[in-house]
Image (cartoon, rainbow, N blue to C red; front, side, top):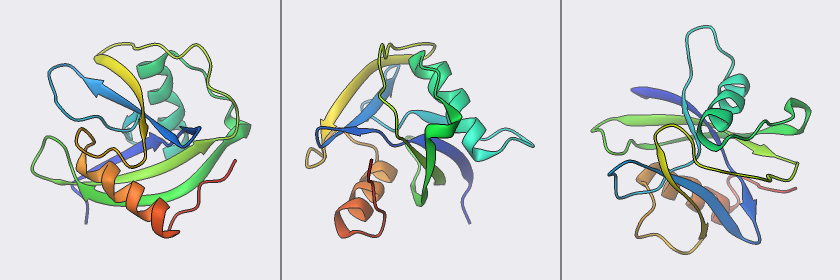
Length: 133
């Protein structure tokens, strides 16, 4: 059972995954965050995307991708990520709140990516999760 339950946006453009970095942390992770009490995961993903990237997602274009569990970063815990994709185009992405960097990563670039995101990438590569726009 996961210690931390989060909702996250998985957005891939030109075979590159959108990731964010917080403050002094070294690793990048998916835009998203903790699901609040009585909040639906899809609503958490939309809220967190707005809070972190200043992007308003059209709920009708948000699609459930699947759940990924992996090591939380930087905590010593397990995180469960309820992952969503977006069938629209993300435009005017900008960092907000605690976000210090927004960057697209090649799916084969692993050194700076948080462990749970590596689990997601592995599941995408093996076909366990299917990302299609």
